[in-house]
Length: 410
Image (tube, rainbow, N blue to C red):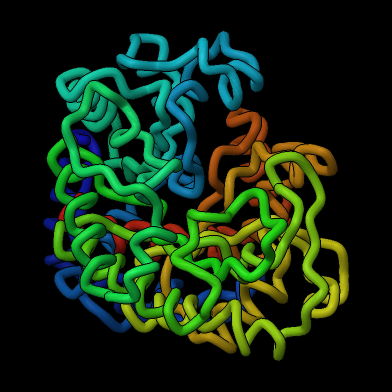
């Protein structure tokens, strides 16, 4: 990191003596411009001085293509272990990274990812967890997103470990049953406080899905309930609690996973509703989360042919991300896919193709590609070959860096 910041300082000294190109403000970077190969809202201009640039903008100006591509990828720590297979990385509980090895340092230098997601197998004790996160940050040129699924209830990587004395919640359904948003706010604040204490900065929560299908096997009691207005108030309140603790929040799983029977971890899952039908129920909590300034929106892998006109997963759909989420719901922030190691993706796409399709369609971050090297190299090749423009990459990287700057990571 010291090398990169020294470069920034020297660059700034040079530009003080002469005018230079710049990029618009953070608010422009988060606009709803399409994610095509035309110059995005985060592209460079020539009418502003270097001193007017944010830290994120200054950093972007000095980054190589590989550094930019790295920011688009969010991985498990096991993905940085060169000898691990995809199964060992993404499924096996036996192979869990609990400390940062020299081999991982080398891999991080080669593939400078923007974020690392921790799971139960990475969590052993408070001292071990804080030490691991410290090692990760110390060995990254650009500060990392360090995230986890700490929803409260059965999906809680830290609270469900007996080694941690932290507040525990039965489920968000139980929290929602009281119908008091203050309960959700307190839950978010409590969860955020211990995440902050151990060095994490992002929670993949709250769940904004409305659990309207009794046969739903993947959401269930992870949802605040089956009534959209209740879920809206609760999800927004939990998000506010996370923010009060200084933790980024990520509402999920857009456009709504509550009225499904299948599990995208295992394969193809579809919804048969139209956009208007979703607006009457599933989208209400997402609109509330956007109004509450969610830091990220996680895109699911469900297909919605009545909305997109095809069988593409939402995570690969330009219509869903650019057409609906950005233009219709006016969401300006970071879009992150659900895990790209899930069956809904791996059954039909290679890691490289899925990564390029997701970025082309409007995603800013590709979460946990099954094969990091393949995804990284394929995105770089897509830029070199003209399939993706570097301006398109810059658009997402500026959103990512601006979010890191907002939370004091830069």
